[in-house]
Image 1 (cartoon, rainbow over the protein chains, first blue to last red):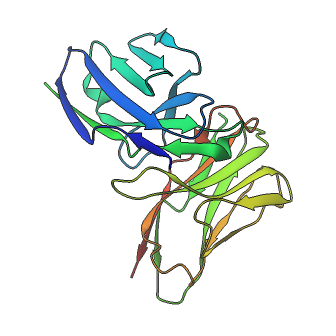
Image 2: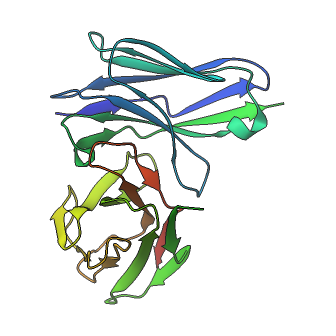
Image 3: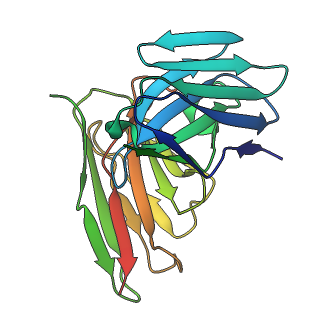
Length: 111
Length: 112
């Protein structure tokens, strides 16, 4: 079967660093996406990894290990506005209709 | 500014009623998608369309219908056959079938 696991909820402190993990067991792999979703709003694209390694984009970085079926999203210098859900999605074919989505990790930032 | 507009933000359905959720994009994207989001679950694909006048069922199409008569528009009808319609519905588009998704701000559908 196809499965993506993320922690349900995490709490971190403003100004700190947090790592959100995503593990996957899928029948194929053609890229992993991270999206951010504030409550009741549209998910917005954060990152895309298809090769192993770390992709850095400002305060956000994303890492992929295909051999381990593992990715993480690293958020630095946390701000209150980073309180949101973070969705991990794996594309198992060559089209977006072949995306498998995790349930999302709700990140709570405390002052 | 370009984007995807979903309306209404909140919608209530009575028993036996069909309701239609609107999705309009001005991004000139070919591909459009409808997802259902339930608490504690990942997004699930209802329908997708890769080009005007063509659409395909996703993983949970039963009780739903769509049309794609214009490139900009991809409305979703939740029919009375959908017995558990309460959910947050998200419309998305992509410039091509394998590019990142752009999402609308969603419609929360509830049953009266």
